[in-house]
Length: 117
Length: 119
Image (cartoon, rainbow over all chains, first blue to last red; front, side):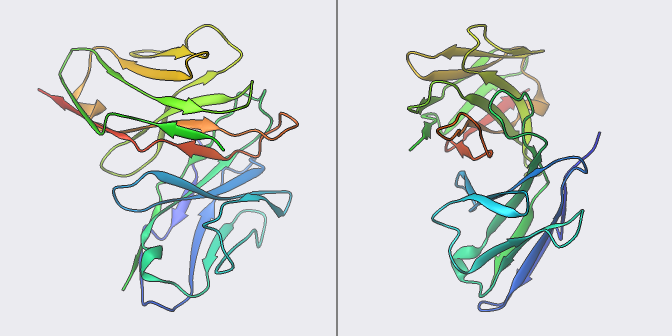
C-alpha cells in the first residue's frame, strides 16, 4: 500500500537556525498538509496546500513558516529561525480529494521529531 | 470554530473485553466527517474508522465501531475483544468544510485518550 514518507525521522537543530522538513506524499494525491504535535499534547493543524498554493493556514503558521512543492514529488515545511517552542513532532499528510462527499481520508506519514536546542 | 473534546485522558481494559472511548464535538456545519485515529508508541497516525455525518448508520470496521449521535454531537469509539496491540493514544478528529461544502482537509483533533490493554 502506498505510504507518505517523511525525512528525517529526527532532526536536532540549534535555536535560530533554519530547518527544512521533507515529505513525499502518495503519488496521485493532490492535497497536502502539515500538522504539529507538541509532546503530550494534541495534534494541531498547520497548513493545507493544493494546486501549488496554500489553501488554509492556522494561527500557528506565522511568517517563520513556509511550505513548498519544489518538484513533482516532494512537499517541504521550512522554519526560518527556529525557537525552542518549535520542538514537536511534525506530521505530513496527503489526500487525493478534498471534497466533503469524497470518501478518501488523509494518510499520515510517520512524522519528524524536531528538537530545538 | 470547530472544537473536539475527549474527556477521558486515560482508559484501561483487560484483554478480550470491550471498552468505549468518548468524544464530543462542536460544529455549525451540517455535513462533515468524523474520524478516530490511533497513535501507538511508535508515534505513527493510523486511521481506525470514519463516519460521514449524513449517514445515520454507525460505521463499523472489524472490532471497531462507533456510536454517532448527531443531535448530541457525540462520536464514541467502541473496541470489542481488546487486544494488546490496541494499546495506543486514540484521537477523535473532525474534518472541516468551508461554506461551499468542500474541504481542503483541515482536521481538528481532540486531546487524545491513552488506552492501555492489560493481559
